[in-house]
Image (cartoon, rainbow, N blue to C red; front, side, top):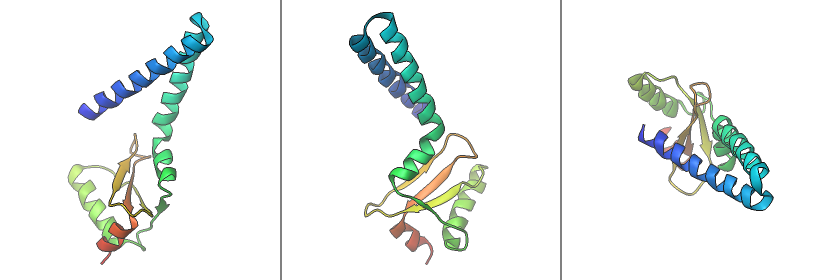
Length: 123
């Protein structure tokens, strides 16, 4: 719940900045209305496409059960404990030790790990 409040506060702040800039550049009520429209489109796009944006930014590739049985077993155990559906699993090429999970709904959730970490799990 705390993360959701932080995200809402961040989006509200960014929306306010966008509306203010639109008011300064365009001016008047028209500028505010255009700013509100741009903020709404930006927020909705990022809400529904956040998983795809994150995966594209990291150049993540999907990995199959056959390629990573250990990784799939680990994710399945975690999901069973939390009573969650199993997400799509991806790997990404990066020198940093980093793992991400993303998605706003059960059908768009995904789990992504760095290639070096992926090789460690499959041993």
